[in-house]
Length: 502
Image (cartoon, rainbow, N blue to C red):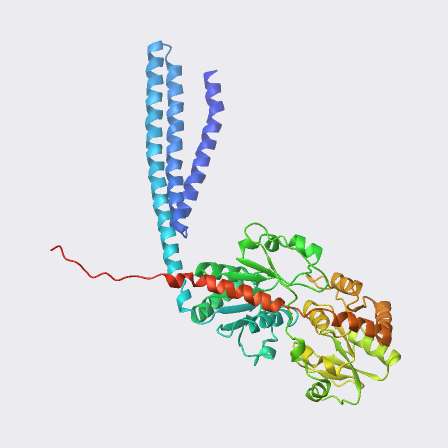
């Protein structure tokens, strides 16, 4: 019976040895290959535990064997006392070892905090800033992000300086707008793996911020790059996230960043939309700042028709319709520009379509009966046109409405984030545009636009709107942040004269 009990216990003993062996191996691995002091300290604790646990188990088994060899109560009491003493000594030794490890880990943690504080104090050089604001944009599908940033930058007080860092390949088209522009190829443009690209982007941001030392960073995009958030946090630079509104419901629900914005940004600005008000739940610690619509071109910047036609090389004796539908060859039967070209030829042959060529597109071929222009910003020339047909993206729609330009808006259903269908329907419901969601809708919208009474009614509603002040309101908020960030300049040191003991 005793032999049987012993055999039953042996498997458990070997299992315990196996576990201890695994702990020992893991501890040796962390000690030898751990990248930080904390990992190496954990490895030491595992090695000690791997040795102590078998000792405790062996003491326990030995005591049980002694119990079975003797039947005297005295021997039993001696064995019990020996076991108790052995276990007590083992526990004391283990407790002492663990206390030492706790103290070592505490010292390591304190040192890490100290190093972090020293690093942050060295990099937080707001009093030596070269520029006030660094605007950063994602690559996007066009110039929308850049246009919003430049619109806000123009409204900053004259004493403020700003630069732009963009991932858009159309960066050359915004040169000469009075702002230094930095370009860094996106992951898609460079063909790089996102993780590898993020490392290089982080290094680029570090170099750029060390040379320009901005007081504030403002990002416009739907996803804050981890490299941008990490560099701003490490250098103590506030990060403002500008979120164009009217997100698709599924995109909004899937965005962990948008509803936990404090994990990647310090402030959130939501530009307004003529289609309707929107409220965003940014999560704890951040209350979004809501502004009016942000537009780059204002009414006082519009050229009169004669000058606009001359600037675009158009004959002022003819009538034109602006086709601003994004990319796509007007000769391609699958494009919206192609379908509207033929609708105009059928329903209003006296009107000449003028297609805006995306700065991201190659130089287009000549198409009979169609004028093609490449201009940025194009909206300051809109008085050359009878009306416009445009995509329902944020910038095009807000500027068409704010500038009082009668427009047929065509929503793009293929966008990942921007809900252009909802925007177009809500604008049309207010009588601020004509909606053209499909082929039948395009024909109906063009018929409405060609009806002079309906176009006059649309024009009257547009003229009754107030001009947007979103860019000014956003710039005012940024100015308040810049002024708040200047508190560190009030720190000072008074040098004391050395004293002797006399």
